[in-house]
Amino acid sequence: MKNLLSQQVTGQLPLLRLFAGIATADQSLADRSIAIALEDLISQVSNGSIEPRSDLGNRLFRLTEKALMRLADTEFDRVVWRGLILIQLDQLSLAEAARTLGVRQTTIAHLAERLSE
Image 1 (cartoon, rainbow, N blue to C red):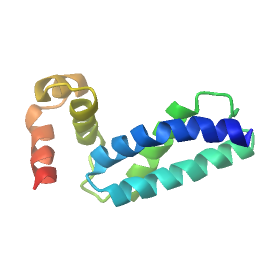
Image 2: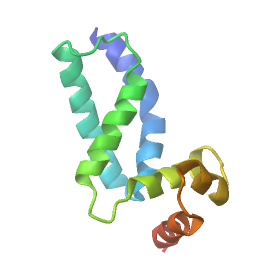
Image 3: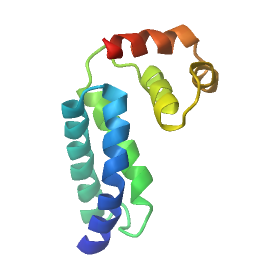
Image 4: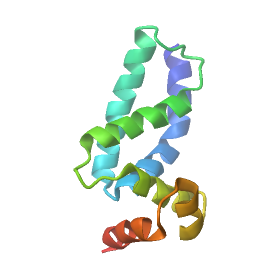
């Protein structure tokens, strides 16, 4: 069981670090959120609430998102950083990301400007 869990998680870590790093523009915060998510995942597998053979990748991303929300400051806006992820990982334009999320382009653009400073 440990070996299977380790293999699944290890394969997800590079993309997970990219996801969390882009989401926060703070790799330290990103890594802390991943550590919390990994602890939560191990706990869920250990107590039997999920099977080690299930799709742990998606669960790990959701747990990381929850950890990011807990660790982030009050300016952290999930919709906006999801927009940035769509732009960075899915190569969508600002307009496409805003349309996908149902927000104004300026909402995403404002945070993107702040993060690039």
